[in-house]
Amino acid sequence: MREKIPQPPTEFALTAFANRWLHWEEIAPCFWPGPGGRSANVNPTLCPVRFLGGVYLISWSIKAPRELHPSDAAVQYIGETGEFRRRAGQFGTSAGLFGPRAKGHSAAWRWPLGKKEHLWMSFFEVDGALRPHLAKGMRHWLEGVGLEEYRQVHGALPPLNRVEDGELRELVLT
Image 1 (cartoon, one colour):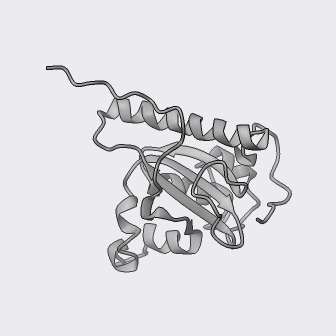
Image 2: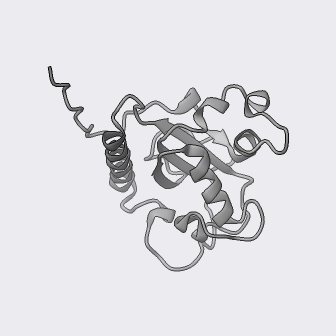
């Protein structure tokens, strides 16, 4: 019997990992615990998301943004990845969060250099039970759905998703 092919959703109705936004200062030591460190010892709740794939949101806000949704006003970027840890590391490298900017994440070159005090991320796993080619396609589809839901609310794509030259001059706090 043939399996039924999953249908792409027409709205962003995913549940965020741990059902919350995570601050960069919580993510960094868990994703990259340093010599001899263990992610599970640093943060047993966050540890399991490191090697999962799906859609992620990057925001800039004094406190965790109000909504765990791509249309929240604090969202600066919507992306997809096959591994959250790798993509967050690429963002951090190109945004200058670990030192000088380096190649890794093209949109992060527009992020104000080294700014992380109000940086939040949320991770939305895309069903790991899907076949790899379908999971990749579904991640891209859901990234597009998230971008469209943001655009419908705000009239434009999130700042880092816009194709513009130059670094963001100012991040607006919500």
